[in-house]
Image 1 (cartoon, one colour):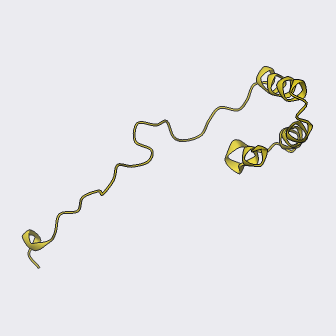
Image 2 (cartoon, rainbow, N blue to C red; image 1 turned 90 degrees about the vertical axis):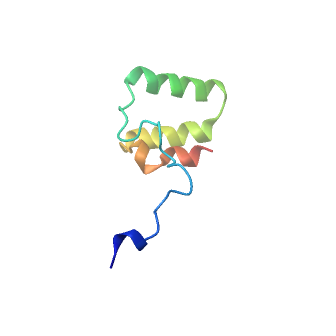
Length: 71
């Protein structure tokens, strides 16, 4: 088969992660965790606070999508 007869392969749209930082993110520092807890408590958002505490206590990572349940 002659290569000159093959159609050119082009991307139809740009990649979703172009110019974005992808990969593993740094873990939250204790001061960030406490800041989130205080803000949730001040907003009287006890359900989200309970879910956040559960996620932190069970050592879930952001890649496990525990944050998706907060919204």
